[in-house]
Length: 515
Image 1: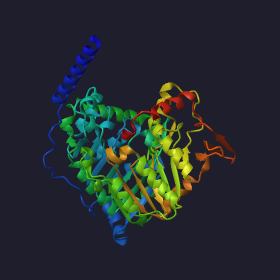
Image 2: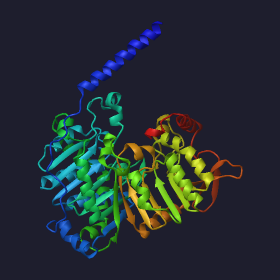
Image 3: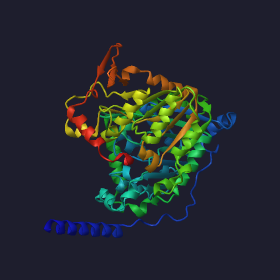
Image 4: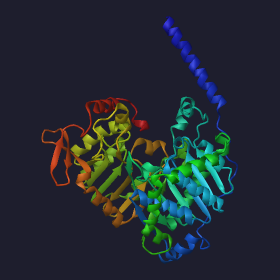
């Protein structure tokens, strides 16, 4: 009885504590009616003068350039920021405090200083260590910062989950940068060295696309919807007052610029001839139909209708595949509906190829724990399942922390191609979190050239394990060496019994709905 009374008292005390925290850490008021909005493309800007004549020639079409290489993706953002003369709208889930994170933030600061209006919308879950800097940037002329779905307790920030979990569990996963209403970059990359193939350690394989024309105008309008949404709060109402934030930033930028990686950063700009040609007005892009697909920002409040969600609109836009589907997702948890869709394709004779991370390559093992059951069923249904191999130089002697946090090389792209004719590139992972919790966006591009390029990349058998069903009925992994020789594994390749045991244990947890 004493134990029960003790537990009862503890429960009451904890409940009262959480209620007190909720009451003492309320959300601020939303910003007042905002007059800033998307700036239409104009030939009075450098980008407009260079690109609008091409837009007129290819009326109604958008120009696109895929950005598979991380350094090209970095160069595109840098070159766009430096070319900006009217406005830069930036929307990201994660902004890291590393070399590329500081250098890109410096480009935005410099643009604002020369008179460009900069609007920076960041998800509060992905900006640790930036409160002081963002607070002072927000006070600059021409630069405004808003925070999506903010944590009302700043220190310790994660404690906010205890009293406001269901709101904070919804995040803005969108990734876009749009300049002068003319050009935009969207895709799977956040901002940080890991996304741009810089430095040692983990490197993500990802995919973005540079688009000019109507596609950029659509992203600008979509940004406005998020900027004025019921989840976007003024940084000045969320962040503590800055204490020399710009000085802190200047020190960090100087350190980043003096490092060895800075020379790589500079080289990526000099070695980007295609991007330089695009921004100077050379007609080197593919001009085609591009459709922006984006969640209603009301999803951040859990109040978006099904027909306003990306996951609800994609099937109608894609239409029924006739021949093939190539799907690439870093975190592939299709759920019952997605599984039924893929099995339906297979039943109709559609070649269905799926690429995701292997256990040795994933950076989120708990997602792999949910993927395993779907994988085995899809393999047996006839899907061609591929799992990315980690780097060959990956050490086999891993600590428990390294086992839990993932590998040196990991897939981060979110894309799929249908019938070698059209391709989706964006932020949408094929998992329950992207479908129901996080806001997402992406382009559906009518491009046999880009779609077939994705298919060719999946033909590189040496980069992946091919997961198949052995004659015995067991699942096995086939590894192909550079010389064409193959090896078969009956357990997840290059993983330890401890690693597999942890993931198996995770698979028993009822957490798929938040993955």
